[in-house]
Length: 373
Image (cartoon, rainbow, N blue to C red; front, side):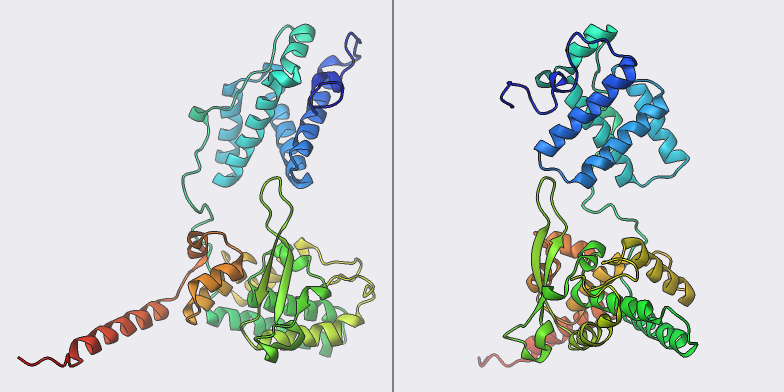
């Protein structure tokens, strides 16, 4: 509450009482959105979350062709049905849309913000909740990713990295511009796999985010990667974690990139590990575009995306016999069940595991017990 006793998004803070408005419907709707934004800011929600929700509310208002105090559940059903049938949106996207509309309506009907009273006085009606349990999807699955999403096989991963290196050589030998960004992206893809990073995590890396691992001196200055922009929870700052290097080649790639080739960029005054040709830091779209181009040129499965590198990091560590708890800490997962969703072990690994168990069982059965009949 403020000093005047009003909540952050209260109508009284955004509309002057008793004042005639030129376009009352539009101005009240705008004031509602401003108040809702203040309420979400007070809850420490990220700006990206707030902006995304407002965009959803505006899209629904445009579809319904009416203002919130006239919205009905039937209009929500029509809109969501259209999005699913025509635009074929993902289940998780539709549920996010439902949550945004439901959150906005819950804010409007909350007595603390007085919007119902304001609408009754100005328009003779009031907003209601239009998103209910019976017309929304329920989140019951642990993972809602597309079933086609998977990790790279080791063969696919080697082909991807070799192709990325070949493009650098091809562009450079042809005397064309672009070999340095291609070299950067090749090193970026390998680093993302080596440390199991998400897109924004690797994009936001700085050169100072690497350090020595006293238990792994062979990695030099690149034995530990400190992630400062991990995936955040609602209302919380980015989650931090540290990831230790497990494959010796990762330190060689980082040392070559940071110490020899990164200084060739004109934007080296930026602390970013992966600078852009025109800006201080590479963009997310550039990362996606490069990986998709290489994948399609190799004829790999279209379901393989940048996040598949993270899936591969987790899967291959499990296949290499690393402790499951260690892999969970590397990935930054709170629960082992989350890590298991990322694990896509190969059939060869399953066969080796089964063979190891069977051999141990046979050896135990044949081992003398030391007892006589």
